[in-house]
Structure formats: structure tokens, C-alpha cells
Amino acid sequence: MNVLETDWWVMVLPPEWWAEAEEESILVGDVDEVGCIEISTLHKEAGVFSGGELRHIAEQESPQVAAWREVTRGDFDGWTASFDEDGAAIREWYLGREGMLLFVTYSCDEDNRGLDDAAVDEILDTLAVKA
Image 1 (cartoon, rainbow, N blue to C red):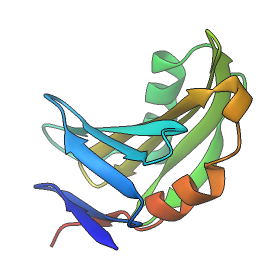
Image 2: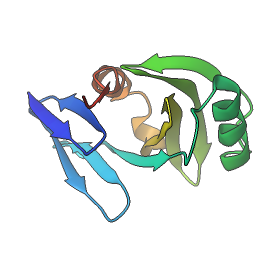
Image 3: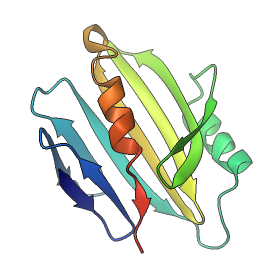
Image 4: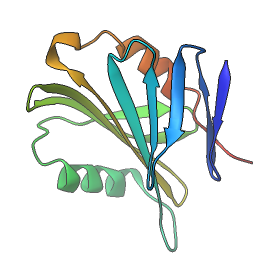
């Protein structure tokens, strides 16, 4: 297992998955190149993110989503949804912990929908706030 560590959070990756830092996000993928996870970290200037606020952000940022559902991934709580866009199957999460928001997107070709779902869920379940 590999540990992906940022200034604010950590996540465990299976050996067949890789990660690289982009300018404003982290990209995570598997060697089979089925799909890719992208994680952006945002911080609130003051206060904490409430569940209602996270849902409002999700609805504003992704108005094409018809149904959001509550979710917990590791140390983070928030909202998730799935949808199709331009030939891609997309899963999104808006995950908050105190004043930190993780915007997580997993995308793959529609033909590959579901292939990495279990692995992606297991990876995101290892998200932990850095002590």
C-alpha cells in the first residue's frame, strides 16, 4: 500500500494505483487507466462546513444532478451523486471536515461505468485528516 499525503489529509492507495499533484488538485488513477480520481482541497476562512452548506455547494456546482445522497468517506461527511456527461460516467463527492472541503470527482468512459466503483469507495474510505 502507498500513502498519499497532503498538507491537510492522507489517503491509502493500493499498489496498482498512482497519484500526482497538479497545480490545484491531486490526480489518482490505476495502471489499467480505466478512470481517474481528482481531488481539490478548499478551506473556509472562518467556521466549519455544515451538512446543509455542503449540499447547497453541491447543488450550485453541479445543477445537472437530480439526486444527492449523504455519505461518509473516512473522516469526512458530505454528499455524493452520479451522472453522465459527454460520454463519461461521473461520480462526485463534496466532503467536509470542520473548515475543509474536499471536492472529489471520479470519471471514466460510460462503457467502463462501475468497473472501479468498489476500489474507489475503498480508497476514499481511507481519507483521514492529517494530525
